[in-house]
Image 1 (cartoon, rainbow, N blue to C red):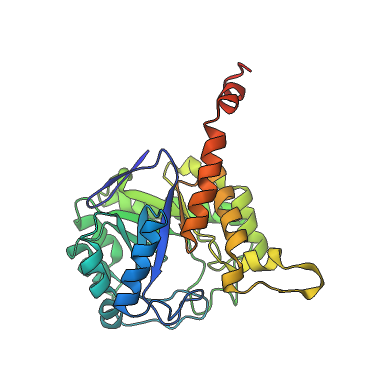
Image 2 (cartoon, rainbow, N blue to C red):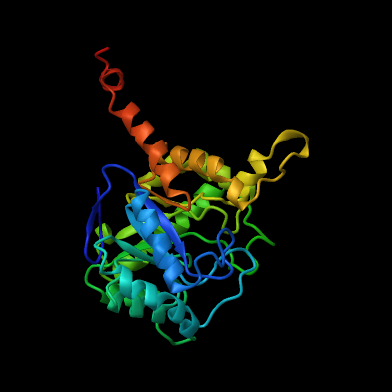
Length: 300
């Protein structure tokens, strides 16, 4: 399986690691650490040295309770970084839902649009929609994510019922809309939206049953990194370090990323690139061990 993007056909035969670059003062995990362009660029370079296959650059936080930015403010944060990173010969994903921002970063050479609103956001009642921007572009990749509600209120009233059935139906419908506009299937990836309007139990239900989403026929990009659901289940007994802080969630984040890959994820979006890459190398060594191949073919 390959993912077609603006400049790259990304081979997904082996899972890819997408490193997170938040050019924001208020992201839930690393807000303000890389808000200045030079800091964001230095962080992006570090992630590549640690083994990231792609970079996901975002200028607006979509954490629970986040306050939206104007397109002008978001572009002011993003463009100095995007204009430099496009020269690094690495696939660049832009985490945005605004059609004007999508158009600007694609014009600057970005490869992928990673949209928590799954291209449903429209600039005004009769304005440009994200689907229009993607459909007009000849090659860019796009990741459609499931979100229940919207960032400011999504955790106040999380979804109910069978989470996997609802996520699958939503993603299938959004894919059909995009395909009807002429967007090739090779350009599309899907994200179940861990933490976006879902309870802790629903998030882990999505992980346990994630392989069922492969029936949709598209690569999965999954983001568990440092999510609060991990803190809930990883809390130590007796109230010690309960729940783990943002930077104490690396181990459960890596565990969740590995579990997502074993359940069919083609890409994992992470803060802790080095540790995730190392863990995936161990998993790959087991998958390609001669004894494992013999067991899989029944020749042991």
